[in-house]
Image 1 (cartoon, rainbow, N blue to C red):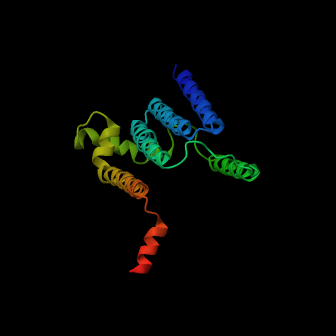
Image 2: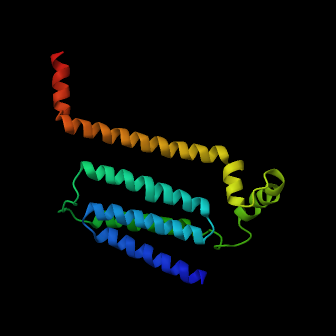
Image 3: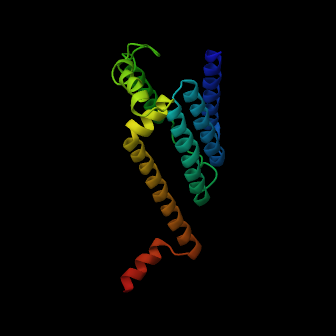
Length: 192
C-alpha cells in the first residue's frame, strides 16, 4: 500500500511540474507551485520525515506562495512571449540533472540500515531521549531539544527574509500610489 501511495504522489508531482512548464498564466503557476509543495510535504510524511514535511508546507506552500502572490500584484499576470531559443536553458537543465544523478551514484540504498545516519548519531539520540526528555516522538524531541537552537535559527532566517520582502513590496506599493518615481527622487536630490 505504501508503494502505491508513493507512486501516486510522484505521479501527481510529475503532472504538476508539467503543468507549471506548460502554463502561461503566472497566477496559475504560483498556485501550481503551492500544490507542488503540498504534494512534496505529503510525500515526506509517507517517508516519516515529518519535520521536513512541516518545513516544506510552511515555507514552500505558505510563505513562498504568499510572497509570489504579493509580487504578482505589482507585476503582470501573464508571461511575455520570448523570441529567443530555448536550447541553452535546456542544455543547462540537462547538464545539471546529469551532475545530480552522477552525485547520487555512490549513495547507499534507500532505507539501508548501515548508512551513516543510522549508525552514527541516531542510535545515541534514540537511547537518550527517554532518559533526557521523555518525549514520545523522537523527531519532536530532537528538533525541540537537541537541535533547538538550530531550529530557532532556521525559523528566524525565514521570518527575517519574509519581513524583508514584505517591506520591499510595501515600499514599491507606496511609490506607485503616490506616483513618485526614482527619477523624481533623483531630481529632488539635485535641486537641494
